[in-house]
Image (tube, rainbow, N blue to C red):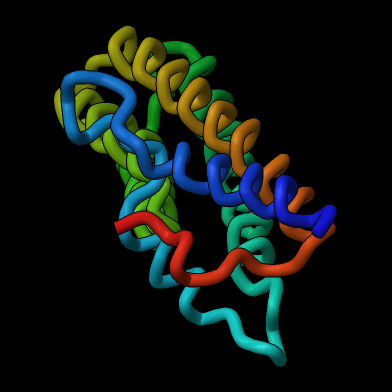
Length: 159
């Protein structure tokens, strides 16, 4: 019985990742793509979603660092083609794991890249980093609790 309050806390944490946090419906941290990742878990791979998210954070953190380095260069040395490729990769991986807010900001940054607007790119990269860290800060504690009690039943998944 002791795990019931903990399971409820896990369910609430999970639901909060999908809840709308503003007047725009797009402000969910995670979207339905994350649900697909979760559905791929089974008894042979019970931590699949956590493993996928860990890989996502590892790879996306490196891409963000690469973009930051590229933007620090002097103006004539900006390689917009390379930055666009990195943003395309970051957008794809963010979308595939359901990192909704990160995807939105990366798409905004891609627009700035196509316009070669370095200052807006720098500003938007800070938004990407903020959303990335906010998601990490919310999902890692969720996974820590989940490891303590096991998977949350599908009945507690958001609709």
